[in-house]
Length: 354
Length: 188
Image (cartoon, rainbow over all chains, first blue to last red; front, side, top):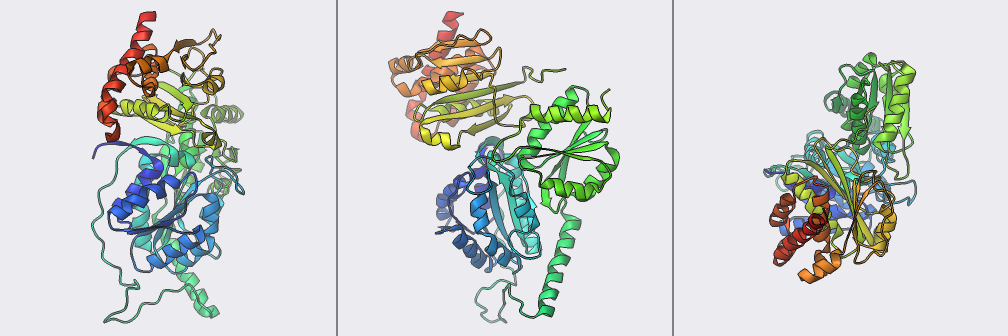
């Protein structure tokens, strides 16, 4: 298939259609509204379900219900709307239901603004909603990666029967880039755990309630064993110039791609700088980062927040190298030049300038 | 120290009133760049300012992968109205290009470190058949003065990507691109 010029939000929407999303429930909020707008006609034309709910609280609970039928289902929102979904997300996770949730992050806290931000990192990675679990979190840095990760999100959700969050920001949602859409997913069989009417079979039961402590602890252990498998198999990252890097710049999503420009500039200036871009925020690619931390003199984390992934980097690096931070907040977008200034300062202080 | 700003990357900003085709002209350039094999990003203004009447978008055309799709200091600013002139005239990068729709903008730039083209695009477009082609007049002028892409790439992109509901305007848009180019060539 040829490359097309696609807007991030629209690309995710069409990718979800081709990945076999049978039902979408959502509520408009900038900067993700094009996703919902696109699906409002596309899903109807295909005879699938599109429903604009009365609120994000309703939308996520509709997703919960539809996911019980074993169909591929999705919702999308942006930071304040995503906050409203927390209870439903936790119920979905604690019911072993696959579903995909897109959070096109915007400036906060509070009503904030509609500009790009990565301020929801803690919210998406620590546990979207209450309780003791983590969703799988994918963080695209380009429109192409947003498409590829939408397909991956549905596959991972089904494979693990787990909640998957696609976490991007307004830049990726709003920009157009050349990208290629995926092949159409063939119809999938209904999973044997689905609630479909129980004709001629024993009933299936889907619930997130476990009243007795022993049952509840056993269920928690079941979730933790699954998360262990996810951590072992699904850590993903991209690297640039890490072979001889003395300073390792670490960033995800938009901050990662802007940091890549700064790293290219630093290389042109003869500085031995590399880039590590996590593609999965949960599981965080700790194993590879720990290896790289053995080789480098220092790490620089770049984020569009006050330093949230920074915690995961520190846990992975675990004292093997100093970890510095550069961030912009509240919808401000870092310039490659200001990241480069920080890189130069750190290289100078490491005495690694040739 | 490198200036990190070779000839392999050009950042364009298009700015004007809603309805002047600012978003579309930026997208057309993006299509032309994509079809010509460049890396390209297009991003609209979608912040609170879009509610205020003046819209702008940024198109970056590059031989290398593009990090930030934003351009705080564009190489080329194409301004279709007065608020856009006021906003972008000081921001054009040194040795950059400012293309002004002088039919609607009474000011002119006094900066000595950039090239300024005052083009009465709305008037030219009106004479060709519709004021709505002013955006193409200015793109024709911009690509002639700053040939990040050949003008032919913009013509091809019109053929390939003009939406079906606007196909009747194809000839007008082609003529507008050429008219903008002609104004610049006459002044050389």
